[in-house]
Amino acid sequence: MRWGLTLPLPLTPLAQHEDLVRRAEAAGYTDFWSGETNGPDGFTPLALAAGWTSGARLGTGVVGVFQRGPALLAQQAAALADASEGRFVLGIGASSDRIVEGWNGIPFERPLSKVSETIDFLRPALAGERAPSGFKLESAPPPVPIVLAALRGKMLRLAVEKADGAFTNFLPLSGLPQVVAGIEGAKEGFELLCRFFCLPGEREQIEPVARFMFSSYVTVPVYAGFYRWLGHGDAIAEMCEAWEAGDRQRAAAAAPWNLIEEMFILGTPEEMKARLQEFVAGGITLPILTPITTPDKLGDLIEALGPG
Image (tube, rainbow, N blue to C red; front, side, top):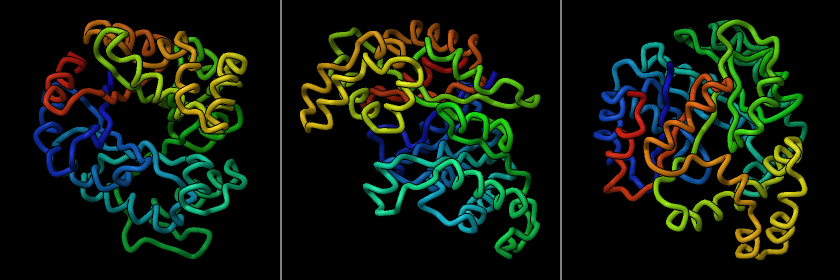
């Protein structure tokens, strides 16, 4: 069984990651997958981890296709595949309208087509062949699997048709069967990855953080659409309305606790690992953990949540 950890680690400068990454690989983590929101980019933490690890797989989870041209994506993927001696997986996705259009000023148009066209460019380019635009890498890298960020419907089908795996996020346990149904007919070896935010402690300790995180993410249009697709439109309606009105406090208060409990991994390390195993039993082939705690406790929590 594969077991992943998100890089960069919360509240931890990249210069302080080496010891934690080495501890995680020694504790049995098989994968390190980067996140890319408003912290470090998706490639730099993995480039560093390539030198700190010996066997772990390294993946972008995920980088956006709007913010980078396809030739640059191919170059970055090839460089990491080379540096890691073939341990790299390229995870790509459309990102979100908030990041693409709101933060970067790039029109968020036809995301499904943009992702599909990018894969069609990357497949020949990463094989050392000439891409449709005429671009050709100087030399072919080791094989680079492609994983596609896919929450629902057409994007899940595109992942099945053109990618080697699908990467989901902010998934409540009750929604897992619907996502698994969306990848029906996938080829043998197809992966279903999911990032999990792990908050240790009792409810009164973690509830403010969990409510803020849930309300700030699930009000993003692509995630709100995901939750409506899962049948939770009524449950998130007040929260989304409050967020749109600029009332962050009311939005957090309106976040449905039953869905927070389904989506976040909460409790003691033993309870968290038991809940993660429920997701694995339901079809997640690679859980990717984001442990959320203070820096002084981070190393111990990473080890406590390890696959052993």
